[in-house]
Image 1 (cartoon, one colour):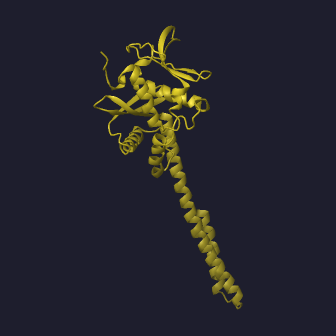
Image 2: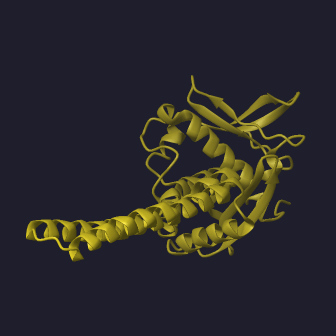
Image 3: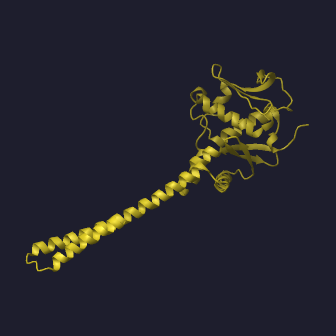
Length: 269
């Protein structure tokens, strides 16, 4: 700033001195006056641009710092935005859970019907997703959360195989979120056979095993564990559904076999 101001001052002073000296040529005086005005306007422009650059750098640095360590306050703000978006879709009851993980934490939102104790939707975000969202402008954050919940989905086309990894991860997350007791020895498993187009989730530990075409015994952590399987025809029902709507569909499949989600509390006889 000192260099820019000094340069401007010298240029402006030289031009003014030239104007008021005994210069007989009118063209010279006009040229010097033009130089002085141009220098003045250029200096103002440079200062304004420098201020904008400094403000942008400060905001960017702040976002990068926040992205590396998203605060609990930011997580709470995102949670409230998600609840607000769900409420606009008539999902007014929400159970909020936060679980610690090795690489951060996971925030889970379970949208419920209190009367029937059914899950009407599930949505989760972790430390990494919060870091990505923290880079957004405030005005865009709410729109992005709404899009993630009610526009994007795990299977945007009718072919599950085109989105196999995303679909498998999504179904596993919903199953684990709604039935946390479906793990074994602290581990959660999922069966995904791309050749047959089947995805399966392990039964909760205390859930009665229902003999059906959906149930299959599979090895898991050194023991035979019943899995609830979903065929390719089942998965096609998730086509073009948003994340929350797809989670409601999956919740219905699971509740039909296992009863009410255990995350809502014990309910089995």
